[in-house]
Image 1 (cartoon, rainbow, N blue to C red):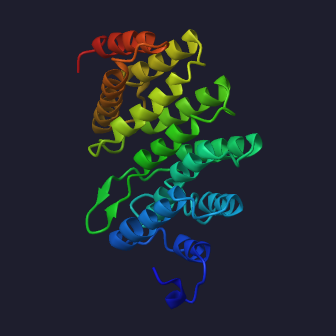
Image 2 (spheres, rainbow, N blue to C red):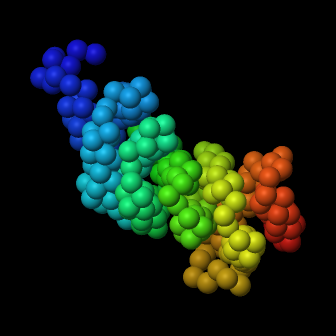
Image 3 (spheres, rainbow, N blue to C red):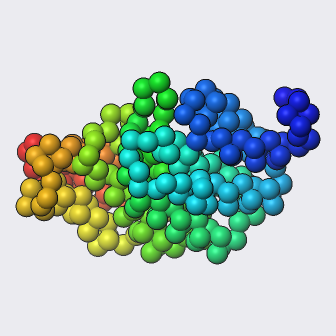
Length: 266
């Protein structure tokens, strides 16, 4: 790529320019050109540690990860969804050559949890505009972050419960493999083998109870059906993802999930 044609001399200069357009409604520009190029450069170690930190801070600021947070059905989702997708490649480099400190990892965790709670637009593929896929992208970020040795048991439990907020979606049925991406993130958290048995049991019960009409005040029948289906699909995906794993706590998780899945006829 000839950077001088853009009046830019370094990849980092172009990266900053691309971040201003990462939420473009043009799927070719946003996904195939901007994000793919950024992820490739990050993986190829084009950027210095300081530049990666700067890109991370930019991606997670109020004009990117939290840009018009809470909106539904607008193009603002593309900025948020592709900003959160910047986390996996950057965190991947950090695992290869650590440059993020403990307090920075914990700051990322808090920002990501806040985002999971605040993101209301859960559309998958948007006609003529391509992927939004915010829940799946956020799950990818959770999966990568959960691998950090700086995160302790309580941190992982917070991430698991924040992820559950998106699992328990009632406004739209997930049909674009969101359940599998979220299940992979949950498996990574469980695979750290830090959660206590009671915490795992309580988490599965939380999902199971959410599928009960008695716990579903204020929702329409359609919303309840959508929520129940999303939870069931997630639990099934997680069960199959971890079924063949032998290490603790996977056998316990499989047993709890199977019991929960068989405990209610839909």
